[in-house]
Image (cartoon, rainbow, N blue to C red; front, side):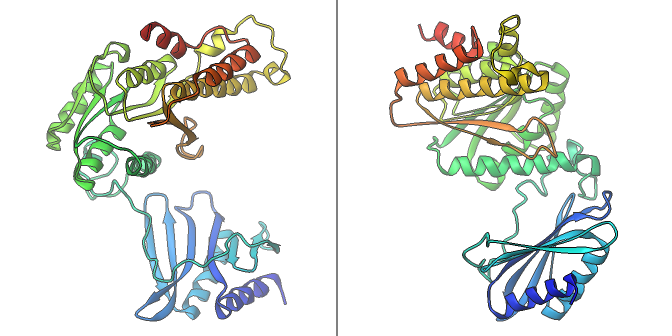
Length: 388
């Protein structure tokens, strides 16, 4: 018996013994292939067990349901013509089959990833929170037929990931009935429009969203699109972040604001006591430049690329600690895969009820600064000036 027959026998066995969890296909044979992955799982349709295939293309997902016999034929076709790797997840073990460029297969077995099966009636597909919205056409993400323009596929994925994150954050955040949101460094407004549309038209929340952007031509453009879409509570203002003055900001957003502009935005959120502060920092120059000429004992800092990454982490760690010092719970996580953008770290602060241990946090900040020879962190300096 060859490896392929063995793999298909394992699939059949897992279905008969009710230990089948799911099966995934990955690593397309052709890099230009529009189909990126396929996911298989059991579903119950009118009390009949079937195998559901989710075909994940670059710009959309398609779902088809097959009988067992049809599923095996389709799987054989996909493994012969489209994918090099298939992974079967069962309650007993994980089994992966890999095909090299000559078509030779190897099988590996690993301990089970899952201890429970997926519900058979769980046919909820991944929600595209921005799908039919008019702004997608006006901003050049979709064409007149409603299809995602290929070169904008990554941006469309980023938008939906962003809205998924926002949706999750809102569920655990206490906000007023009328929510004032300020997006600092809104750029061309892709994420600002998506946020407004989602909160207003999907979540049915009463929101006022303001985009702050220094480039006047982008502000004019975004205000024109907002008018075309009849987004009456969405507006854009041409102003420097540090000069923007708003008495109350419920949600402060700063995505990819360069260098200390991120700190200026966080500062505005802190003095406004925002319920949520959401940042995706970019261009970490200030701390790195502040240590120029300082001898570093850490061998990692000998190499330029490591030095850059290390000081990015130091910068954002101090930002997170300063948020904690000002009574916020903080999280730092991947915004979207490196495959789509290198600017992929998101820092979130949500207002906490418990008072912070300021002395302990100060000690952590000073320890970091001392270890890396950092004389000054811009946000810390701004807070010291502002809260005196």
